[in-house]
Image 1 (cartoon, rainbow, N blue to C red):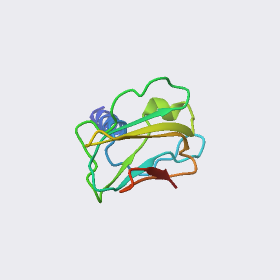
Image 2 (image 1 turned 90 degrees about the vertical axis):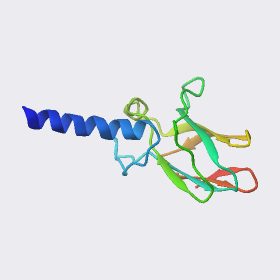
Image 3 (image 1 turned 180 degrees about the vertical axis):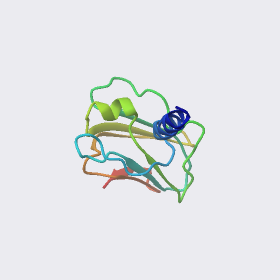
Amino acid sequence: MAFRNVVFAAVAAVALAGSFGMPAQAQTDRDGQQRWINIVNRSGVTIREFYMTDVDTRGWGDDRLGQEVVEPGDTLRVVPTPRQRSRGYCQYDMKVVFANDRTVERRGVNLCQSTNLICTSTGSCRVN
């Protein structure tokens, strides 16, 4: 019984870590797809907020970085929430908010094909 509780707690901790933008290991969903995005900050400005929703969800929801930021030169992996992943979506809309209040939106990013969102000093973010 105690072992079962420990395993459940470990699984819950991993699920929560992925939900809040914390670094996560590659995860394969039931359909065999791996869904995540590496936020690569090659700009000279800190990324303060990051939003990611599947294409059928209205609004941006919660900031996926929480108390974290992505400093210039850093990379952070974000995975969809367990609820988003269970719905089987590949297409996601993303919004990056920099510390200088500049925002960049990327719509219809295919996480089943692309794994990097690279933000550069030109103030743009591209997907590859």
